[in-house]
Structures are given as structure tokens and as C-alpha cells.
Amino acid sequence: MSSKPKQRETEPNFESAMDRLEKIVEQMESGKLPLEDLIVRYEEGMNLVKICQERLAKAEQKIEIIARNSAGKAIVKDFEATPEPAAPASAVAETENTNDEIKLF
Image (tube, rainbow, N blue to C red; front, side, top):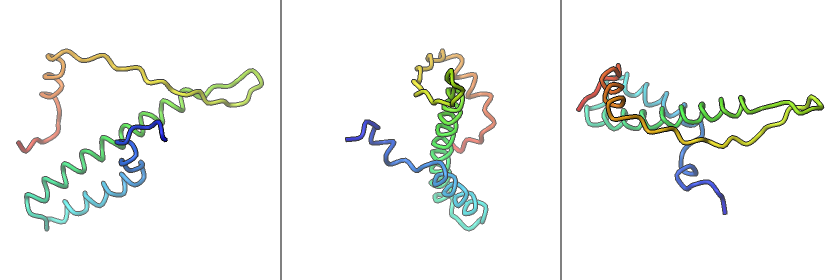
């Protein structure tokens, strides 16, 4: 049995997510989709962007963890994520106000 959560198993890998994201952008830019479909595609695209950002962050962390042992050989240490402290509500509200993203609703 895998130790990874089920959600991770259903998420696409980075390359698949990027390919799907590119297709969504092409569809949205075509101007042929009705508003309801545009909203659905936008939501899917934002979820894919989040997946890609998470994958890139983890890859960066793995690269930073690569170290050299005493013999000069590269070794990789497992990354143990530390939970990020929760931001105060005022900081979250401020972040939302300064976001350049266009919100439909």
C-alpha cells in the first residue's frame, strides 16, 4: 500500500498539468466558448496552476537538500516539510486586496 495520500495519486504530474493548462488557454483564447464553459475552464486552469506551483516548490526544495558527503559524492536527503505558520486574518485580507487577478464573482 502506498504511503502517499489518494489525492496525490489522482493529480497529474507536472508535464501533464502543463500540457492541459496550455490546451485550456488555447480554448479560452479562441473566443468560441460560452461564458459558462469559460468559467469552468478557468477554475480547472487555476487548480492546475496550483498543482504546478506545488510541484516546482518541492523540486526546488529537493535541489536545495542535495549535499556532498565527505567523499565528494552527491547524496540526496529526504525533505521534511515544515508546516507554514498561519497568516493573521489582516495579512490575508491585505494579500487579497493587492492581488492583480481578475475576479468574476
